[in-house]
View 1 (spheres, chains in turn red, purple):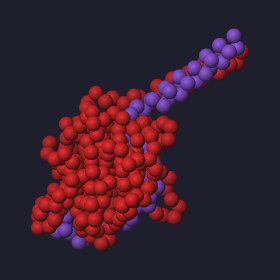
View 2 (cartoon, helix red, strand yellow):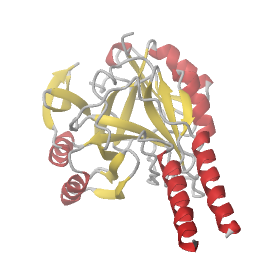
View 3 (cartoon, chains in turn orange, cyan):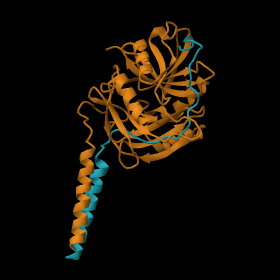
Length: 287
Length: 51
């Protein structure tokens, strides 16, 4: 009998101690919608083969701080904070022995119904990277679109972070864009799966597709500017000076993939990779 | 008496499990995606096609 009491007490103490080591997130600087903001990128996770290097890189580049958020089903997970809001998560993965790289930024698009969206995607040529499942955030899944670009979908329990919370600013995600080899087919796919309104615009002498919902543009599709890159979802982060930020990224162990130049959207962006090879865009954003 | 102790032990176990599960709150996803990434090396074609 004493043994049982001791066991129960020990389990309770262990539980409390575990909780004490993982602080509860401070959401006081964030506000959330009551209904899903369909098509909005409501979360971004970095899948990384070197989470320690990633912490140093993103901490140094954007001033992010990190909180451990490991829990059931998310070992080693950390969430990044910037200016009073949570901006992203860092998911450690084991490097592959065959040399193929896994590190990437993974955007999560808000949908009304994750399971229905998965079914709709598969019916239109997608494959499922991770089947629909319940996590702390809500219900999520990861999808590989017909061209091979990987993205997540989510229905949040909290509601989606509203547009005031996620307003563009340095150190935060400011845009998300698909590089596609077939923009018309991609627009049709995401219209069907996510529920976007897709519209093409002409700018800088070329065509660009905006994906929106309810009159708000949420993401874009650009015809893949090089045959050397596979279709991919690119995550844009705000910076005040793209050239200086790219140089800083390089000094922190990253690589400059597309340097700032006047013909590249007026010198407003650079494409870099982090120390694990995950690609990100540094985009000039207003202060 | 033994039944009461068993119930108390179960309640303690349940409570500690709930506390652990709720520690990290509802922020983030943390789902591991093991899909290989293609080559995204240096792009030398310039920026003229980034419309």
